[in-house]
Length: 194
Image (cartoon, rainbow, N blue to C red):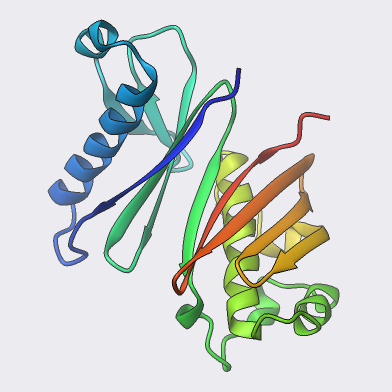
């Protein structure tokens, strides 16, 4: 069974370190309380660590292999938790992708042409594309430490003004889905099951 949950918690971006760590733990506890019986919550030994690539590792003391992904945008922390599924999450603002942004650093020429032809403004489409690619890299559990955004090839794009979904080829096929929330694009990604 696949369980995915996304929650938002605000944390001032000027307070790094302790605020971020406590906000992450609050998010994880909130998400897990949604799915676990109350008696199981009390017996959890929750801790967060990072692997050699900087990917978060959620340790619960349970035999279930939870995966967790975090994203930071506009002073807020977003989190996604899944069971038995390598999930990736990224949140990006369309304002991060202004006209002079070096799009060729993360989009291939054919991807730029495809995004240019969409009904979305290009900055918003670029934010969604970047968010999808970064979510895939997080799902691969390497981030952009061992693969680059140009190594992730977008195909089969489905778009409307509030929705952006794309298949992305990397070490295997991934699916990334992004929803617009105000000026933000929130993307979840993971490997396809087929």
